[in-house]
Amino acid sequence: MKPALKIEHLNKYFGKRQILHDISFETYPGEVFGFLGPNGAGKTTTIKIAVGLLRLDDGEIEINGKSLAKNYEAAMADIGGIVENPEFYKYMTGMQNLHQYARMRGGIDQKRIDEAVEIVGLKNRINDKVKKYSLGMRQRLGVAQAILHRPKLLILDEPTNGLDPAGIKELRDVLKNVAHKENTCVIVSSHLMSEMELMCDRVGILVNGAMQGVHTVEEMISSSSGSFAEYIIRVSDCNRALEVLDFIPPENKSAEDENHIKIRLEKENAEEELFEVTARIVTKGLRLGTVSPVENKKLEDVFIELTKSGGVQIG
Image 1 (cartoon, helix red, strand yellow):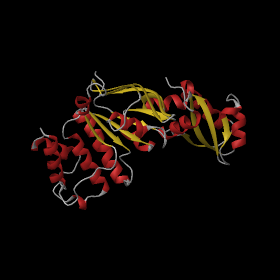
Image 2 (image 1 turned 90 degrees about the vertical axis):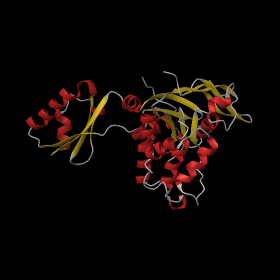
Image 3 (image 1 turned 180 degrees about the horizontal axis):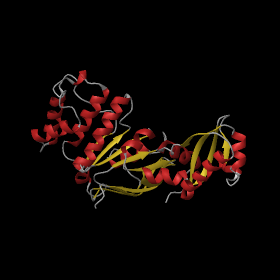
Image 4 (image 1 turned 180 degrees about the vertical axis):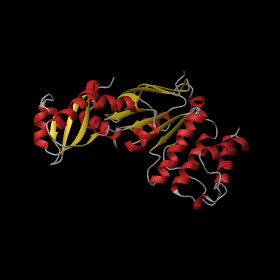
């Protein structure tokens, strides 16, 4: 499959200071790709270069197989994007704004406008004036405008900024819709890990201007979580319970509070060993309450590890 976006060995300098360090990655049609990193990591700089707002110093960028440096206009024709907050004529309706953009762009008929409105969920409000729209509705109208010409690549820089939880969910659903129904590659830059975990098919994390790799969310969380499963167990006597579980190394068991112990078991044998744990506790005359697995790591946890340590090994 041809990449929607292909970046190879991208470097960027502001004066003598290097902002981006040898960045390479590819994204594909039909996926939502999360471009993640702390503030100042270089996300917006990379995006501005990809959409032609900044010049690249070294490297190569291709959009749908077209070189940004050698075939700029053809490459840019395949991009839609919102780098800042979308701007509209607020005294006009949403539909009038889309008509205005369609006239400037050319080659966009009413059927395509209606399709875009349907995709972003604004059918019932598209004839209201934009000044009556919430921020979330304006963002969705911005997405409709950006996909009118059926771009192969849609790029959004921090699109959820300022949105309330309902607005964030609506936008998340819209972007997944665009990717999967239109077969468009959607790249979303953000530092909101919880949203990216729900939205993205793959993610790339940028730390200090360098890419730490590109993986599915599941790969990143699984690799960072290591080979252990953790459980919280309610018992009548924590100290006694820790004593009878003498087959578990001391570093893998502890008292959480006066009623609960925490144990770590190797994932490969966790189910069998958990039977042994509960049997030991009961046969030694202790009362056994709940046994609860500790919630798996979230993308946010992995992100914190990466930004603190400079990377975790994945794969």
